[in-house]
Image (cartoon, rainbow, N blue to C red):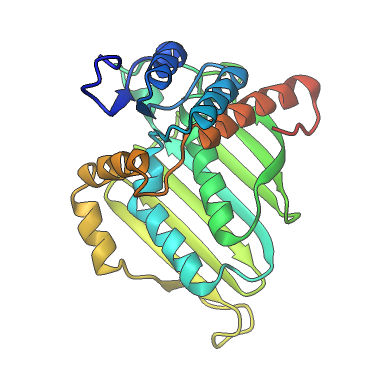
Length: 276
């Protein structure tokens, strides 16, 4: 199909063990690639795919769905409009899923499946907030039953901020929830969302009290309109990315999430901070 000349791009939506060969086939044929996450089973394979796409000057996108959810887009806009949070102080992130309570749920590596989603979300929000990328991580599985339960970990960023994070597939009361807080010496942003439910709050230093007061942030009308047509909106973004019309994570950013997953696993085995 990719060699026929009849298509411009391939969407690889198969088990991750098959991604590498399918992506390579598309790249060799000169086709742009949209790939499901995780990009590859290992960081080394993901890096090689990213290098191959860059050498061929072929656009790629990876299906990091959370980049299109309303909470992320609101946070990204708010941080841009307010110039970040001032001098960064600390941040926390949580991905809370009830997947393990579903009788039909297919078990797999939480680090690659759930973790890579959270790793990309963290990367995007830290960049938007001016906190810098995570340079070192140290983590622990929530249970000896890993890979299917979840992880807690800390990350150090280029700005010197320590990030606390957790993801669990056995979180009662949650379907596919996200919570995060970005804090600085000027402002703080707090987001909690699960499916259609969303709460966004912000605090600003000196807004009446020295330490600030949490106030609700309303959903902008244009973002609400985009969210009303999700997932069509998200798929349009993926297509726009491989057309060069939209900024969205590609193979290089996806390879970073693979490296972060492997760094977390190593940090547990070696009991030390690891650079992804």
